[in-house]
Amino acid sequence: MKRKNLARNFLDFLSRNMYAIINISGKQFKAEEGLKLRVPKQTVDTGKKLIFDEILMVHDGKMATFGTPTIAGTKVTATVLNHGREKKILVHKKKRRKGYQRKNGHRQWFTEIQIQNINMSNRKRTATKKSAKPQEKK
Image (cartoon, rainbow, N blue to C red; front, top):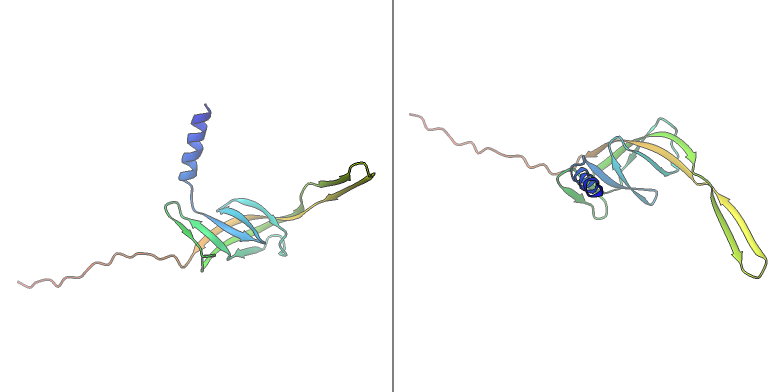
């Protein structure tokens, strides 16, 4: 049963649509069209569009393109859904036998976005040229 699920997941992975690895605020995310992501807080109002141009890799379903370090001319467009805070993380410090204990909490801000599209404007397209042979007159 597990092998069937693994094989199905692997085949789904191979047949995926276009995706990109993007850098947002120093963190890398995998972006696919329609995917919702929680990224570090962005200073954009809810409902507005964000354009990310720091694209590290793009896979179009057949071929992967890697940047050095980024791919020029490629952009990912996203819409801001909402802003919020993550669950509280408790930080507890203690030094044994010294009576030293500190407890602190932290909630990180995030922005939830939905990826709209991945635009590859600089992609080299190979056009097939037909050689025009002059027709002989008879």
